[in-house]
Length: 246
Image (cartoon, rainbow, N blue to C red; front, side):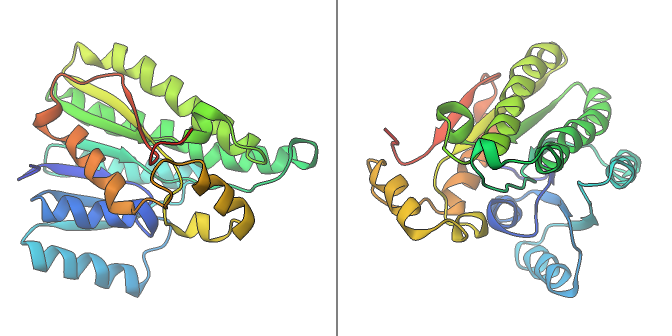
């Protein structure tokens, strides 16, 4: 499905991002894996996945809290001697709190990672895609951006901004052969949800038709489809991956 495509993945250290690196490699893609940390464990993971699937995995340190770091990563990608066929924006953080207890400092920190740095890297990578008039960008938003989730105002609004970015870029870049879509995962079995109190998590799962958490691979599979030529006429769309949340 993704044979010989070169795909950038942010947030590759864990969760949906780490699974995406694995899934894309299994589908034949070479992956540029951007991670907040490039420690020995992450480097070993990249090496093993590359060897097992006979593809190239290029780990890059990308601190999304620092514009300068994001710019350097963007420059590194631009200078690579290969086309960039896909970009998957997964990097994100949250800090749950009810609105009246949400500090503006926390809001700014969440927006810096979830929106501003994502926008900046997309801007830089898109320059390389425009050289070939082709590419697919998939942004990872959240059902909280669509439905709202109590205690997640900063996270929800930052992810809602990602949807606005998706819709606008799909119109701006479509004529240049670059598609831009988004996925909105629900309750997925990732580190982020491991910190949610069990009673709140149970309530969220009760609101799904499938009555269970989603697996990161169930998200990465949809992203892979949107990156592939199988979705060549899909642009500007938001796909929910939420187990049928009411």
